[in-house]
Length: 80
Image (cartoon, helix red, strand yellow):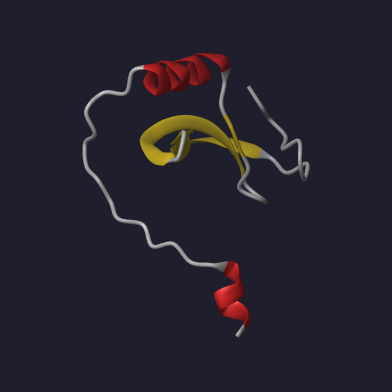
């Protein structure tokens, strides 16, 4: 259990989050993942059983529940 954020020192609370996982060039989102989340900065921490389950999903992903389109922007485009 993580009670304090390692980055900012803020308190954490248990929440269900959407975790981002990269499989090579492909981004996958995993919903309803239990995590300890910093109440100040939002940093997420996963315990060992959750991390092992995420590793199993990465090794053998099940069929996707849904697919979403994600726009991609270049940082330099915002400077003009």
